[in-house]
Each structure stands twice: as C-alpha cells, then as structure tokens.
Image (tube, rainbow, N blue to C red; front, side):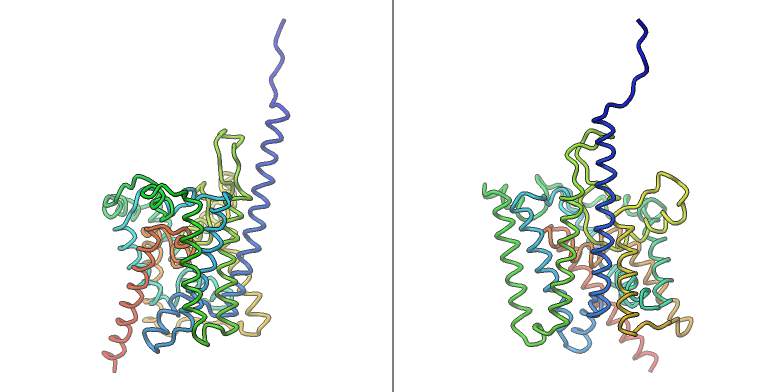
Length: 384
C-alpha cells in the first residue's frame, strides 16, 4: 500500500492562523497607543531634554515633575501586572542577568549629550516632525542610520569589542524584585507590588506637593504617558504572548524585533523602520511593534498639531545649526543602542521594570544632558 501525501494537520493550520491574528491585534493596538502617546506629548510638551534644561537653566521643575509622574504611573502599572502574574520582568530587554554597566554609562552619556545639541531625543524629534519640523527629519535619518550601524555594522563591532566586554554576570535577572527575592526568600511578585507601588507613591507625592505638579498639563502628560507605557507592556507581554509558537514550538512574543516583551523606545525602532522602508519587497521584513510605534507617535503628534493650529514648517537657521543636529543624531543613534535604549526606552520603559541597568543608563543620560547644556552656555559666552 502506497502512502499518500502528507498535509498539515488542522490544528497546525489553526495555530498559524491564530499566530497571525495575534500579531495583527498587537500591531493595531500598538499603533493606536503610540498615536495617543504622540498626541499627548505634542499637547503637553513632554520632553526629557526640555525637563533637564528647564531645571538647569531656569530652576523650573514643572516638566521634571511631569516626567517623574510618568515614571510613577508606568512603574505602578508594570509591577501590578507582575504581581498578578500577567508578565515577568525577565522577559523584557532590560532585566536579563548580564548587567552591561559600562555600556549603560558610555551610551547614556553619548545619548544625553546628543539629545541636547539635536534639540530633543528621538521621541521628541518624531513629535517635532509631526508638527512640521524638517530639522527633526534630518536628525531622525541620521539617528536611524547610526543606530543600525551600531546594531549590525561598523560601530556594532566597536561596541561589542569594547564597552560590552565589561559587565557583571548576576545570578538572576537584574530587576530589583528578583534580586531581592533571591536574597530574602520572598516571592518576587509580592516584592514587585511593594517596591513598584512604594517608589511610585513616593514619586507621585513629590510631584503633587507643589502647585505646578497639580496643573492640567502635568497631570495629563504624566498620567497619560505613563499609562501608554504600561498599556504597551500589556499588549506585548500579555496580548502578544504565545505559550507555543507554531513555527518553533517555544514560547514567543509576537510582532517584536527582539522576540521579547517590549514597550516604547525610539532608537532601534527608527533604525528598523528605515530598514523596513528600504527593503519593503523583502518578504522577511515584517511590521513590528517598534515600527508601527514610530508611525503612531508621528501621526498622533501631527493630528494634535493640526487640531491646535500649531503645525508649521521649520528648517535649519545656518550651517552651524545643521552641523550640531547632525552630530546630535549620530551621538543618539550610537549611544542609544549602546545603552540599550533612550530616555523613553530606558528612562520610562526600562525603569518601570525596576532594572538596575535602566537606572544606571537614565542617570548617565541626565548627566550627558547637563554637560551639553554647559557646553551650549560656553559656546554662547565664547561667541559674545
């Protein structure tokens, strides 16, 4: 008796269909949340570089309070999801056992310096592009190319052979609840709720103790942006989670470039967006959470700018202005990949996981921004 041809079982076909359906839901949800993020950022002028500059140059802590409130909301949301068992920090990019502390410091300093001389971080430049700023388009193109080179090109080799070699191998994931659970024997879920909730409440109390922390813009920007970060963690870590990928038979997080749980970050996703656009006909290039987030932030900001009639075209003032923005784009592209994220990727998404590396990277970015602000003052004094 001759055996007939074999065909995929109905269960296998259904599994592949379910996987594609889940990916589509993840992409649409990510786009919608990112568009809301972009609109809120445009409306409230949420900006990490701006927050640091306001404090250093004017002693104004209003935007810094908005930023701290966003961290508090994102941290509370993430760790409550950990506490109920929906997600785990170790499934993210930020909480692995390898603590790349030197990469976080060097990359963070580069990114922080670059975002000041480029008039904002990657996210801010996406929002500015949505508002008609052509300088932001140039910055983003340079940032994306530099970031891709640091992911896979010449600066990637330099990164891997230098700063990435200096690291600490921890016995567990590097998020604080897991580390303290190993030392204390307490459940990481309970520690996540206690630490995440406790730090979030302290930050919120600091924000709300001053009248400017209770203003409409601070509340809208802080709460709205923090909720967007937490919502994307749910989308990628819960909605996009497959216990068994039909192709690999292993657990998977669908529609992410890292194949891990992701939230907003705007350095590597800009690089992946350029790659997707340039090689669109290559069927292996698929839309991901990061790519649709880039589009969502830009279009959301554009909608907000048009509705408020603040949309206007803007270009470079002179060659010096162009040179500084080009240099800033390079520093952010290289630094953002080296530090495994930007002021949104590490400063909000990463910090919300309570990862040690994220706290180190964020501190380095703030330090780099302060140095760049001092550099700008020196340039002005020298010109005068």
